[in-house]
Image (spheres, one colour):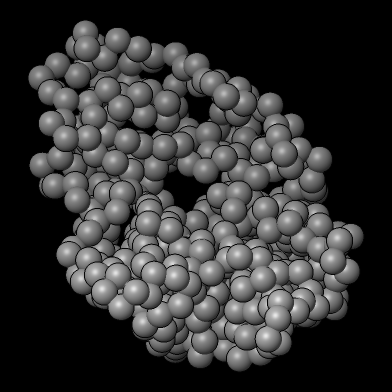
Amino acid sequence: MDFENDERFAGISPLENRIWLASPTMHGEERRFIDEAFDTNWVTTAGSNIVAIEEAVAEYVGCKYAVALASGTSALHLATKLAGETLYGQAAPDMGTLAGKKVFCTDVTFDASVNPVAYEDGEAVFIDSEYETWNMDPDALKKAFEIYPDVKLIVIAHLYGTPAKMEEIRAIANEHGALIVEDAAESLGAKYRIGDIWYEIGALGDFNAISFNGNKIITGSSGGMFLTDSQADADKVRKWSTQSRETAPWYQHKEVGYNYRMSNVIAGVVRGQLLYLQDHIDRKREIYERYKEGFKDLPVQMNPYDKEKSIPNFWLSCMVINHEAMSEQVRGDLDYMYKRELGKTCPHEILDALNHFGAEGRPIWKPMHLQPIYASHKFVTVSENNHVSSNATNTAGAGECIDVGTDIFRRGICLPSDIKMTDTEQDVVIEVVKRCFKER
């Protein structure tokens, strides 16, 4: 598309500095704690920074124990492995703890939520989303238990920092004697109300994980954390993360382990970032509210949340285009095409326009049941248990979409949500999106 000569965008100049979807924001305190690690020569996988962030995060989230790990993915892996061992016992060295078992998983998420099930030789069964939070649909989960009553594990992710319907999901899990792995990688700082009590996301599962990846609400450049109220579980995860070494004067191993430890240097970055967690959340919310106000006259909807029962951390601001305002768009596995229609637009036209003017956006995460790697896995919607081919073109119109997750993916985009973005720069992003809907 030739945006340079497109009359709809006349008068808009490219941004001087590129605006990213979500990049790290450093404040200076991080360097003090990194220097402390260097000055004391604690640049290994132990040290005061690790101790400090484990204590601080556990207190913030409201759990008893936190184990600092190399990444959110490693935290999710060990949480999932521990869930499998809790349910089915210790596995042989050449077998995962979920071997031969099905696990109900969030469908619209990044694959790091789901891959640990495969690491542990389990089979993910994907549960469709609902429109009120874009997360796992409790009604679809009920349907899944009707079809697969022997399942004992649920992996739930909170998409873009918006809490899922955890009260309903927990009740369903309890009814079926199932455990929950809570993927809170995107949602540190989000809150959810059960009864009269507000809980931090990351404390609502039986096994919980957060991420400090470079694009998260706070970062260590990498890193993650396992969260629990069980000292035995924390000790087990800590042992696994240090290659499962036994307390012998030589290297002694009774079970498979991993080198999943966090560096004390990385922990120094996290320690400095924790001081600004609420500042980051507040700024993310401002960005979300400015988009919502800026798009109020457009045929779009912002990513939703339950205002009575949840407070997101607003990690990413997203939107979906109304059905009637969608222009034609076709996606393959690796590429896409779209047709320009005056007065209408589609995610890829908006994303291409934003990119042209210097801002990064992304499509909504592609549902797991559409991923080629999981093409043979089961997928459960409210209405039926079905599977959708990974090469679906996703061009269905209003009333024709196959499922909620596919519909959100088809019509949705993640907007530039970097907290270093100025109001003036965000105004340019808003104007570019508006111009995509111009009729002439």
